[in-house]
Image (cartoon, rainbow, N blue to C red; front, top):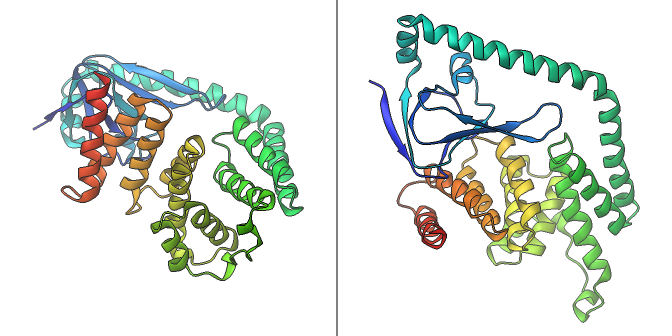
Length: 322
């Protein structure tokens, strides 16, 4: 039997990239879908009407969702299994016709966007690769401020570009190198640690001790050198955590978002989503923070210390938001 599920306001019903294992219908309340426009890269928000199915394409096609569904108010959603949905549709031709109309409209829109993209893709790709290459040139020449500026410019123009995850890492690499170069304190006279020969455990211990700047340098060196590939997902995730602890919240969200997209099944996914929530809280966006924190609570082991931290943070934010 279809199961009704109650969601609090700002709860995430499913994330883009989540496996579609059923088809929800909005019984009451407000739900919004958000996804990226193929042509402009802008975020599109689409409200769901009461009584409307959503997430159908992904479920029937047996692939992951290409949008995020968020509860905009307290709401009740009925979740149908694919088999239950097929029974409902087979017995109601009007529902089937409505679905075909919606799919037809969406396909025409996507076709138009793809045609537009094809006409400009070559120029856009060339500009994108060119700006990223400028950053790499300056980094190689040890002109760190210019490199950081180039990579930040890249991210401002192509926040979800093909080089965005690398650019985010390289901003950190350039700024860390520039900070070392500009540091004229007594500490700077001590020979710098050679992160290229440090083990994963040694670098990770720096993180555990709260030495986030040093830890990020070590993690970045591992990414750059391709060392310990079995730890690569964890290392890229920890770079995002270091950025959060260094109060570079916008960079942290970009890095963590890239990690979440790249490793959607990683054991540390819940903690990555948790740090996304903390970063949005630090930037003053309580609604987004709550959405990510509630999703994190669904991903981490129930009853553990991380789970308790998340529950406390959610309670604190909700009481403060009222």
